[in-house]
Amino acid sequence: ATFPNSKAFRVALRQVAIREDWSFDTQYSDTKRFRASCTDEDCPWRIHASKLPNTNTFMVKKLPFEHTCGRKNCSKGMANRDWLADKGKAALEENATVSAKQLKERLQREYD
Image (cartoon, rainbow, N blue to C red; front, side, top):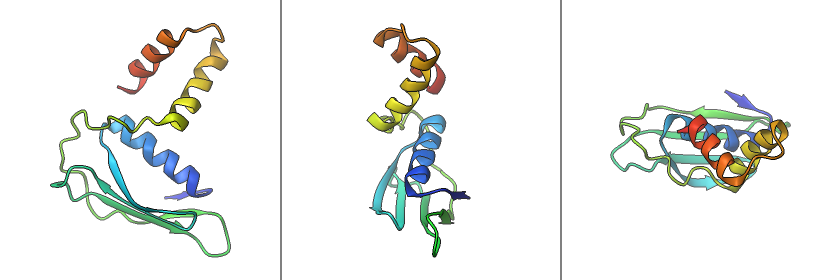
């Protein structure tokens, strides 16, 4: 899979983790390379991605293993402020009068 840049890749990875209810630890991350593994020490899942030469495009280079962790409610902490801001912005564009409580409930409904 390819992404326009490293930020788009990281956002997409976080979105998948939240959607599928798993989490990852980042071992290395800069504008040229990214490496992470599942937070479950017994799970072999890991990912390596890097920038393609002469472009900003980011590409997944290695994704050798599937998750074996069971993916049970382990995405806690994956919804960081950037993710929440992005998802919250979309909800607020639909209804600018939504309360914080309603926004929280909507996001939990959609992503839990």
